[in-house]
Length: 240
Image 1 (cartoon, rainbow, N blue to C red):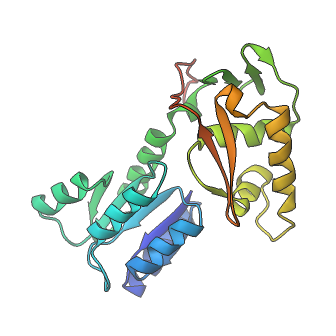
Image 2: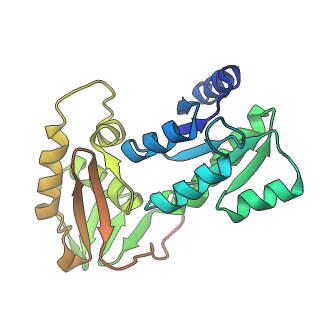
């Protein structure tokens, strides 16, 4: 996952970032609340980790701004030295998903992060998921619109599935290139623009079918449901 860390103590930030990197996650750390809030407005993250006591504002104020600004329920974990019951209740009431006390214990932190990832995207464990008029058969790599199979390339399928799994979330071109194309180096981002234009036509991602791909100027794309669409019940896959 792509994780944003708010931690003003450099040694602590480096320790947590290394801990996450060793387990395959990408972590970017920020030392002030303003830098952190600016970053989440311009980059895509899967999870946020917040300290409480930072120089320019409290972690609680940062959390409230996150919940007011973000258009999707990004998971937020507090990792702080403050461990009173009142502090924990205040953070959870403000919108935190979990709360851990420092020092971070690697196994516990990763277990909490993995649990949040499963909670935020439960359909990742299913074989077939429906989004309104669309049904995605993950095992067969087929997408149907009102029970009619759509003609698509492998990349069309991967990109459409990723959009459905992240509907309502701003996805930068860089994130799309990394997650769908597996590219981390700089390449011409018009690759993404070309595919998005084609998806609107080929996959029927338009208001008539309950969705639209919205272009966010100079930032990326967001798949928006014209009405709130919750993934419908599907066949479960046994965990490995």
